[in-house]
Length: 93
Image (cartoon, rainbow, N blue to C red; front, side):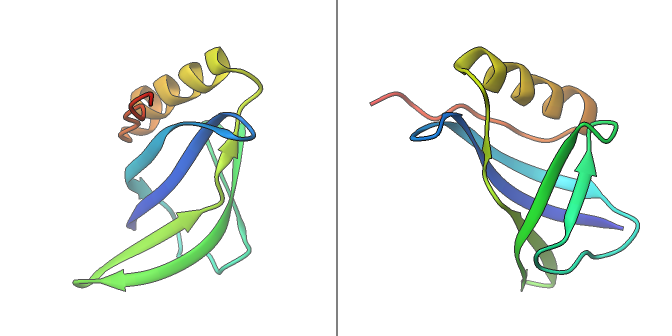
């Protein structure tokens, strides 16, 4: 089943890189607090919330903190390429 997802990627603990959205194919709807593995089991995401908006189920995951700005960029690229998600980078202030 496909679910809408939402979470952010951080380059460093206090510096956001961008937002991840799109549809993710899961075998079942996980519960809040459960872990979901994507990218060939390499990335574990923890479910923060689940809500239904206009008949669509949205899963919000905890934010992901990368090791560096370049790691955040590579992660966003893989999420787009391998999972078909959208990972626009936030505008710099």
